Image (cartoon, rainbow over all chains, first blue to last red; front, top):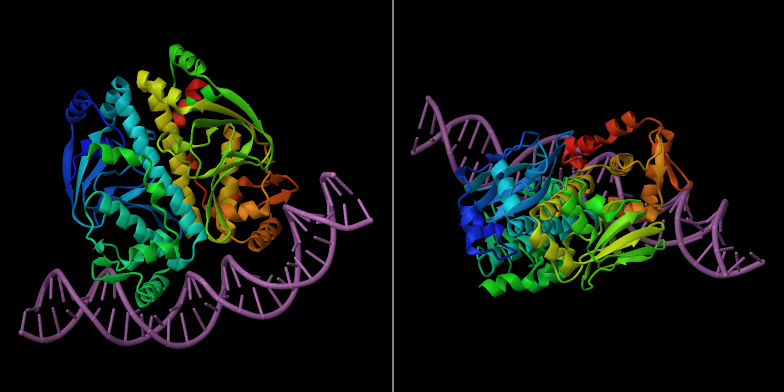
Length: 242
Length: 242
DNA sequence: CGTGCAGTTGAATTGCTTCAAAGCCTGTGG
DNA sequence: CCACAGGCTTTGAAGCAATTCAACTGCACG
């Protein structure tokens, strides 16, 4: 569980006054049940949502019963990047386990930004951080084989969860079905299933119920060419604050 | 040809003082030849680059001679979203025709942002605008058929060029080879070639040398399910300034 | 007048999808 | 407590979209 203020200063350090101003924002804390929507596609966007606890998927629906998961969100991630820039939401966000969400009214957020360049900067850096993940996903879906895609996605989530202290040494909770894993990697469910079987027999990756077990992370990274640089716009900052 | 100042206030309106401050930034204007690099992957990032004229591709290299184009950049687009947040560049940007680039030193940009929340806001909105394009690309590569991917990409570029007045009524200049088109859509060159033949015989889309001809844009949009909403975070703004 | 890159086409192969069916869990109501 | 329903997973078999390999064309350029 992280407060939304922590999440906004993920990539930057704010002064006590700025933190106080953020805390003074009107906000609602909402609990969301698994499979329930946090944000719904094509609706007017009135709030800036921060996932303060849980695990969620951000997705886009295409004609013909097709769906693409654009990103997975973990504790501390903003749900709707572009809520502040447009009148309607472009993506849905769905809770994959019980989640806690903080909702900030957009006009108030914009008003606060007008008063503090460093808060604006913090929001900007957060958006940039998310966009380098999006870019890596394009490469993942476009140019990697099925098994590499799945492995790379698992490496990413493992790394992100470890950084916020939510992973186990050899794995993590994974409340994602094979259907959803297919929607994230651009593969069919049947093929995801076969890929998971292969990854298990080669000892790279095992799914037990709702958790992922990684015996040999180095081997998994080597298999899919995972390089965590793209997750790390400001490597020094987290360390300097710790 | 657009000045970098115009491009930064693409999604927001700045005061005369703010515009003056931007203009006062030290900047270099560089001409870049076709196929020459504008930004190189894995190098320290010292400048914030804005493409003020031309057409460029932003790409990521993967092991095994694989390459993924992450985005195409047109006049007025920022080249390196995350230059300000990280020490090294994650992507290369390559000129596809003679280009003009404005280079702004990152420390000065950050210093200016500290003084003006609205400039920070403008940069933020620019990043958000680019990230909704990235999200749409994930869906494109992940869940559309080959022909739909190519058609959708062409619809996007056509729409973006029309908005900045760089398209013809029925098409536009397209300095992109079939190899590059494959790298943008996650397809092999051979298959791109066959898709283009099919799109031509169905009268959806024709490539003549270096230009795209679209006889019936409505039909092309219907074919690939193109909806330009994602390109338009602030629909009212451009109109209100015009 | 070759050299090299972009485009084009054919043939063989494969990675992945689709369809179909069965097994497995969990929750629910009789 | 058992029967049943509805997701999720697993497996087989057939089919297809896209890749790979290979050869050839056309064209631009030195």
